[in-house]
Image (cartoon, rainbow, N blue to C red; front, side):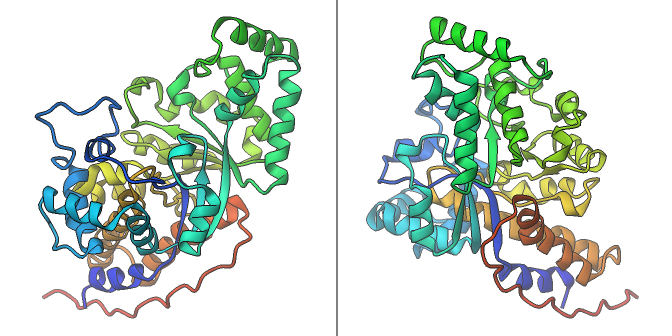
Length: 395
């Protein structure tokens, strides 16, 4: 048996920690909204001449998700949508989230929480463990809506409360708010209170974009000992892509107190090589190629291969960053399993790696790495025994 085939069989049974994810849609949505959710770059309705199914992600949905709904692979869009509507969102959610093979969901509830299932509902639906990641800008928005008085102390208390209730990490979306090319020095108490006063007076309930308040929030999470996740690279058009290259995080990463907590670079595309370098250069930096896996579809093997170029293998993780369509929770896992079997299997068949080493590296990404850095206390699921494989010498 070729290593790729042996590895594909083994990784199919490997349970995953999805270390950055959101909930699936709570209620059934229109076809327009569903197809628009297959486009990450724009939140506008798609032009009438554009179908969300006519994309790498759309084709991947028809290829890999159709069988989960009892359809043939590559089912036509109309047939796919008709079957999805017939089953209804609760059943679609159940099928896709259980088929993902996830043992632990590490859930960011800071975006669109009213539209998607809660952590408790995801846990109940799948029987898997579920852990909270708090979004720092969401905490800030809630506090500023109540006024600016004692903002710094109230923010510290909110983060402490999150730790007390069991949050395993914090997330920042400053990529969307300011970019990374900002002053990363720790603001003084007076600067924080002044910035809070000014924001409440001038901006009201607008999305927080004051870099002093955002940096304060990130460093507060660091002070609390939480691993901190950063959205990096690919996202919708609200961000300026050239300002979210992770190399712009160097001033933060060189800060001694920040070096005491894990820093997670999420998604990274098209900066996965820069992220790999940072994971090698800093002992506390980790990366995944989450979100982008779904959107590059059939090109996922190349993306996964690049994530394994320079990063130490103890620094690479799996995530889907799925939000909304339950297809994304399943498809992230499906495309990752397909990609690692193809890429690492080829390295084994070429004699560059051994099959046991390939399995060990994938177990690191799937379970060992996220469990260590988030200090997950859920039960470790059974890990399949590595396959035996004897490479035949080529003539």
